[in-house]
Amino acid sequence: MQDYSRDVLALDDVQLELFVRDWVGNKQSKYYEVARFSGSGDLGRDVVGFRTAEKHEGEWDNYQCKQYGKRLPTDTAICELGKILYYASQGEFNPPSTYYFVAPKGLNRNLEHLVFNPSKLKKILIDQWDKYCRYKIIDGGDIPLAEEVLATVNNFDFSTVCRVALEDILSDDSAKKVLFKFFGADPGSSPKGVVPQDILDTESEYIKQLIDAYGEQEKTIFAHHGEISAHPHLLQNLDLQRERFFDADAFKRYYRDNTDPSVIDLVEQDVFHGIADVLGEKHSETMGKISAVMKQAATVQTSGIASKYARVPIKQGVCHHFVNDGKFKWKN
Image 1 (cartoon, rainbow, N blue to C red):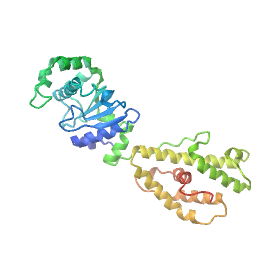
Image 2 (image 1 turned 135 degrees about the vertical axis):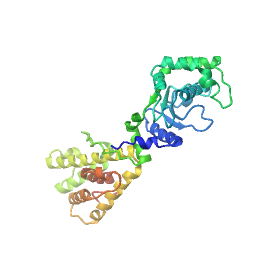
Image 3 (image 1 turned 90 degrees about the vertical axis):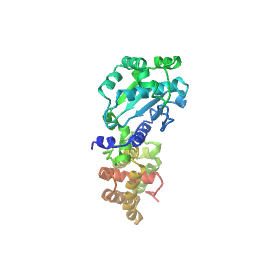
Image 4 (image 1 turned 90 degrees about the horizontal axis):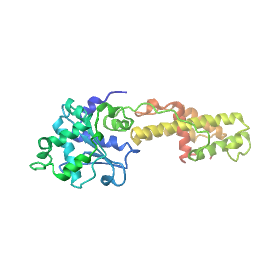
């Protein structure tokens, strides 16, 4: 996969915050909601991930984004940390559960040492409050380390202050969709579909129409898929069609999770137009129609970033998804 380090480093301050907001927003299992704060009223927050519906009154993480031409300096980082703890002491919000420094260029050696030694980070914030924070939290203001501020600092767990290295972001699966959005990154191939042993409700419609087509071919009526167990050739065909369906399902899920919905829409549009003429032809029996459509689907040339990963079974499986979703029927 292409290295997008230089592309991220080329983002300006605002673009980096937007990039991080989208990246954090993709961590759906971790956060209830993600918000970006910007401007003079951000109170030390850049991108915030709320862990619960209580938002700032519950647990939340702060992603402090710093796009510098050099490694993040100690004085800037200490001031930012002091700022957010000051506003927490004033009741603006709970102190963050985790405080991330997102600095693509990295932290300077001294700051990195402090982050990896939480007790030292705490000590320097307290001992050198006047140097790093007192006159810098508010422009033209004076914020001494008063009792309520010191209490908040003392109660804060400094081991939750972390750095986020550029390679941490780029290697995170949650970043794939963001890299596609910002830089048109290729997310790679989708995983192969996993076919469950039992028929799922989510595949019931195309299965029902296949079973009807099998009955037509065998000149009998199968009430449900369990009744074809005495016909090995039908079972084999059903297994093949389900493999195609779930390959297409895995493909669609992967690209919807890691790109934009338009990518899958384009593939589906190409497949549909590629098989439309065959669908419109007269077929003596339904299985003949299915076979003809599958052969045609295999030859369709799809377009877009996912085209080179749209394997034959995927394109064929997309046809079953069309049937399952009611776009057309196997058996009229």
